[in-house]
Length: 159
Length: 109
Image (cartoon, rainbow over all chains, first blue to last red):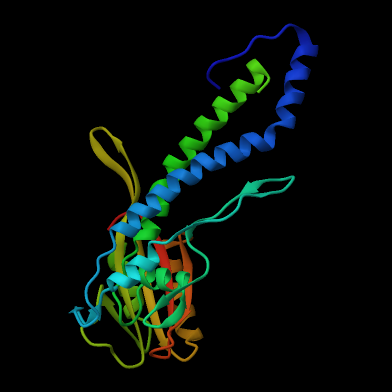
């Protein structure tokens, strides 16, 4: 941990650690928020990079996603932070729910998955899988940096 | 390793294998194999080291295709050892095919 701290005796240290224990969930949430930001940015960039074409157009016997499908897949969803005594978690990815396409209600995640995995008639563009693999390290770094900063603040100024 | 995977998949009976794309959709069970991107790697001695490539096998089966799927899984197990997973399994309403996507990582092409 960068920054460091100064204590006078064991009692003081115990008091500081107790305070840290009380604030553990806040630190976890703060760090998770920073990590989710990085992943959300990667997701947006990935959605922007989807190649589209009109429905009739074919490449190697398969069609590409239409601009309407790209627009649906670009809907970003971030779930509420779920807190328990053990952990804090969230989900960043395709939005939950339905979107209208050609007069029909279709699940957003169905469209996103069909672009990411491809189908027997649509080309595969694994942009989201690549985004999640690529943003993992950056998200971890951002979370560690934020947690370090918050812990330092609590230890030195009482949060 | 990639060639070994192709060979192992081509040895499966009743499964048609292609790299990347089929120009026309074949009858029966078929799959495509491709390397998607470089998942990780590091630099050392001014060289790329320990590169890991992520790729996928897309298996399309008419009907349940459990036997074909387990044969593909054994092929992946023999070539990629533990570094693969069944990423998704989807039923295609339009064609009646079941689409399984296996994602694997391998060290060298």
